[in-house]
Length: 128
Image (cartoon, rainbow, N blue to C red; front, side, top):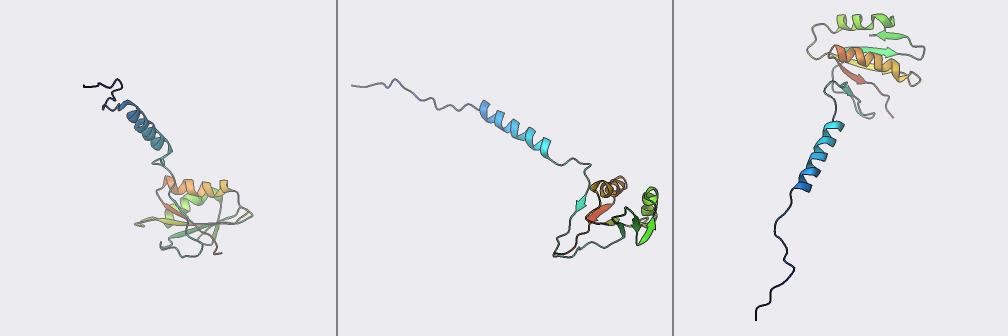
């Protein structure tokens, strides 16, 4: 006597839920990825040394005085001075030194100038 089971399991697999998950992951990674016009900011390790050659240094002290290569300069002329100093360099690099008490807004102004002119910025830190 042959008994037939009433509960047959279908061997088919529905791909609709899998495609929904893949689509959501794709959207998530596209939204959280870095924008192509983001600032290129390298933070060197506190214990190591930077491997990049220093082309120009920009220093901002607690009195909001700006120095380009240890020469005091007015804030409005930083971009002009950086263009002169980095003219003809193959990989123009700026070492940004800002004291702890300086607001991040001041450092971002220098990074914005570097971004507009395609300069690499390295934020200097003191060793621990």
